Length: 384
Image (cartoon, rainbow, N blue to C red; front, side, top):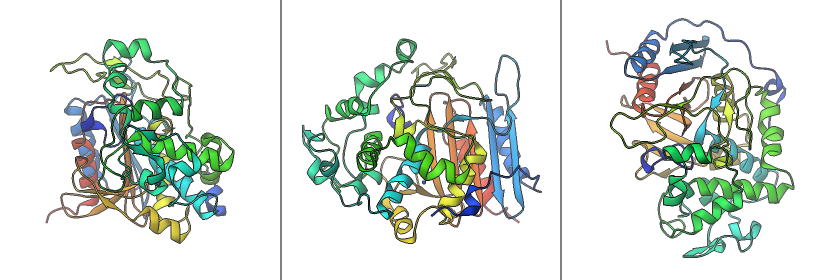
């Protein structure tokens, strides 16, 4: 979901009433969740710098942490810290598109060429044959610009320091993608691609005459009171309290050096993975989304109509900006997740949004197992 995540990590790089406008409530200490705390402690024992998890259920809210936000000072992880959410951003982008569809500003069966004429063409591409729906469920076949060899190289190892403040326009990202042949014909497979969501946001801007950032604020951030969430654009520093984002810069070494990758321009991620948020805000957003409080019924059905995934997270199906995941115990959870430099985040919950878990690690080498452990600890019934 970011420009330099390898294919195996490219998993991740979705009508507001008065209740939505109220500010998020402070966390209430809810009973239980000891198994989740054990999973957090286990993650740190396994080499993760720090990890947090916030749970919302019928008992209130619970927050747990382990490890540190800063290995130099020993500062502990805390609630309300901001972090980069990577491809969990896609749920926000898809929600904006679907809200515009509900307003009849665009249609899911519109072609890319209708809104962006002549942009997607050549080298096996034809924007007249690719729909907005196919962008959102990754069945367009469009190459993921993050997997372009030259582009990937600018974000790996020492090159990252040379390019950490580079700015990319959406058009540049699309051109990087189109220099590579498509994965398959539109509608003939599943191919996870950040390019899809860059194009979707470009269509949002064309259909509304407003920026993608303005639409996020108008449609989601302001109605839900997501005061810890924003799209940084070219802004390299993370606002407010935040953990250090530790990264291997995707070094192939067996024992890679760890770097502070907190400060960087993430214009390369934009609508595919650029948002900064908090555990509380993500639970609030996904709870409202899953609970049907953000989209009308017709668009809700579209979002949760899924396709099979290939070469991606095991036991998942992808909808429009959200995915379902069947846990080892057979329970299915819904939401989205993201990986970027120094930050992996997972926001999943019950289909009705009443039971949510958001967790985040401030390191990018732990893999998915730590999140699977947290989800299993919370959603899988304990064995007698």
